[in-house]
Length: 98
Length: 143
Length: 163
Image (cartoon, each protein chain N blue to C red):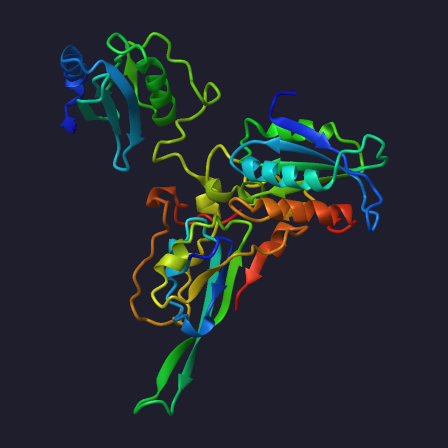
């Protein structure tokens, strides 16, 4: 059974910061930032890894289409049934999932 | 006013924590009106009408996409309400323009049109979301 | 069964007349879509009243060309053509009453591709961010276009990006 459309839940450990959800969102409501961490001891020449630092959904714009959930290549996004609570200001509807 | 503006419902004070009476008017413009109407219906079943209620909080629920052409209906509806009054923006069309955020004909939300007290996210929000907002307004919250 | 027919704009009325004579006397809609590279796509859906035969007739009306009105054949085309004309600016000849249908009189043709949707231009697209990419690096990166924003909507070089 699919969860009722409501809000979006992020599994940050699965997110690779690929930006696909940000770019596919029709309402432009997702903002994402990540930074590159370099580990010199990982592998023969060291490895740099992209680490998610910010993932913000503006629920004042989110139209519950679920495209972000559908396109995520690592299934890092999922529905949760409850929308964030009603707020006094639209700016407060920007919810930081990371 | 034409049929887009719907019923005012009063609520009696004095149940439990003595919630404040509400007089609710809704401006029903598009699909969100179905959910808002359902929420209002269910909420009014829990709060029977009381014509003796005094000093209600006048609540205007705006439900549905607001265009430049019909925006005057929102302002006119608000102007029929005396203070104290509160505006509930129900659904993302009223918060940001929602799916029509880029349209030539749609207001990007009603916050520049009227003072908005409560923003209810969703496309559409669940009827329960409006019930919860009205409960909280009656309890003196959110303002 | 539905068939598709592409005709030259000069044969618009001719093609619809032939279909009308064959019994496709019900006009479902006329839809006009502005083309990115200029001109307007116009499609008419006609059918027999029992829907056993349906045809989508399309044509391309160049910016300098004219679409002949179908109102003599299909009176219901009157409102369809008014809407097409006001929204896309397509020029319709022979229409009995070309008042605006949905927009205030004198409005620009808002569905034309050169009508700028200002929210799309003014709102920064979050998709332009390239997290983890050094902005000063010399590595060539793909120039990303913003969805729904044709290049000709963007500010000319030398103009500020935002007010």
